[in-house]
Length: 494
Image 1 (cartoon, rainbow, N blue to C red):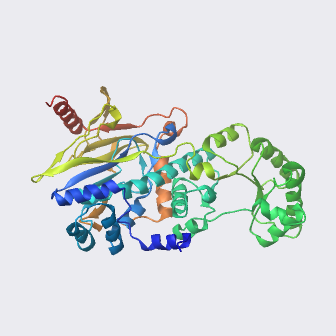
Image 2: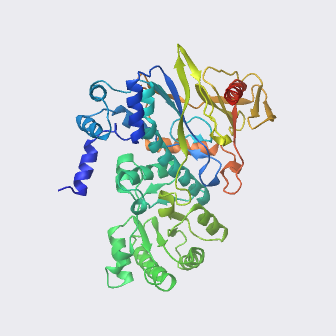
Image 3: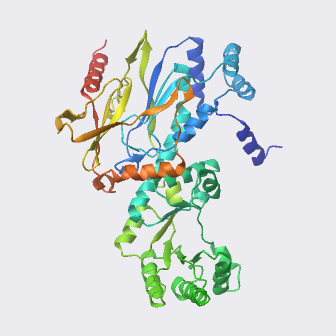
């Protein structure tokens, strides 16, 4: 009899080789059958920022690395594929006994601030290998980048006040929620209630109590005091089970007075509001606490918070100083998906990587051709990011010389950067070389610190929610001319 437990055990035992859409397997077989070989270059990039924002925070690379390192077609994989389509036995034997990733991957480090159109990750490999990685890469990076970006918006709205992630019960099943909690932490949350994520990724763990705790006892005061006796160093009491201002806050104050008299009041104590008019209740609760002599009592709020509501509560003068986000953060409720894509940019002909371009009647869907890299240009004095420059991989720049960058959508719009006034950093770094991982990823805490540093180099106008300033992502003159040439060739062909 199959049970959920058996399914979970089976998934744990499986590798990642069939973690693909079926058409990837079909194309792999076709490439193998027709001996389509040589090197190809695929780019991952995204087209628009979630929630109409000004930036995204890239996350998910660590998962991509681990999955690629464990790519192996098992006997059960081959048995499954044999049932799916008319794959030849020769091909299936090749998968099980010889196939492995042998290519190169370059990517931006996790926590990097990224913008539409620029390469986030680049695969240089055989057609079969590069095709195989599409879903692995997109699934890991799209999902985690979405949540990291969302969390950074929440953190911006809280203006530096603690932001807790409480999303486990509303997130994707099992490991989806674990990695979402990781992404939320990278994006700016300070702690998570998800103990498995906290354990695996060394994230600070946090939690208060549920209404059921209060209902277990004869009265609210008994519930609060019992909780305080058990959790001596972190006493956050949920005060809205019955009546927040008439019962919850007064009983919390009564407990805190008793603890203070006994010399047991910890540094971290306060209440959580989970319903009602959060601005009004927090203001009244603050008044009650201050009058009782508890000016340092924490007022935490939850209840379907999103960044817009947090911003509104701030403007209303709320006295909330700790924010707990759940459903709307962990599901990215206002924007369901990150639109990262994976497109062919070059293919080998002879000993040369020949650029290719995908055309479309939708301008945004026309790809940038060729083997490319990305430079980030920053103001040397302030450190603020000025623009990103997508260029061909063999292009080099001398920051001691003047640099002219231009808007590829309106080429007359140009900016002159005087030599010595700017810096340029190559964003893509080596991850795999000849199938071997050469990159040592940072810890989750180091990635979070890096993301916070990245965000500090963005002008505030780019981080604002309404009509954010559009960050410049330009093409080098060489790449721009190549793109225009290929468009013209295809437009007039035939």
